Amino acid sequence: CIYDLQRMHDEWSVDSYATNNVPDEEQLAVIEVDFFRADKFVDLDNDGITDLALRAVSKALGTAKIDQSAIVDSTVLRARNAVSHFAPSSASYSPDVKLEKGVYFCGDWVDRKGHASWSTEKSIVTARQAASKLSTDFGLTRSRNEVIPAATDTPQLSTLRKLARLLRSYRPPSSLPPSPWVYAKQLLS
Image (cartoon, rainbow, N blue to C red):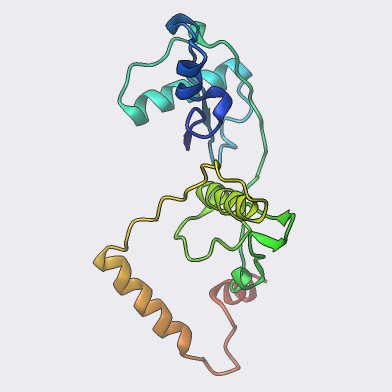
């Protein structure tokens, strides 16, 4: 995932540069690149991972690769095996973005209220939803925390969702395992 932090953080925004009359040569692009299931290259040194990130940005955006010497600052964070795993029905235990006035949650484990997003995108969506609730609760009127609606389902995905709902409505005999994961675990043990 590539994040344009200039659109997410006021202190790096293009608007801030214009407002503060920052000369073009002092303006910076600020991005973040997240790799998932990156265990195969997590042992590269920081320069190697930075170079990999620059190649990924170039490939994803169809641009020339930024020369590493143009990087003013970089940080590499490593989290081995850091992947969210969810169990069947775990979403029913997800908290809302607002517990009470002054207590807000965001993350990929929080209920995003119908927005079709997952993982990092879900974290951003719930962060914006929490910011919106906070802004409303405390009368903040200049907050920019809109959530872009997810794209509508394609006809194929819509059909698969209907089929999944139908399959979930069928309750198998109690002698069958409750989920494919339990069945696989029983077979392997």
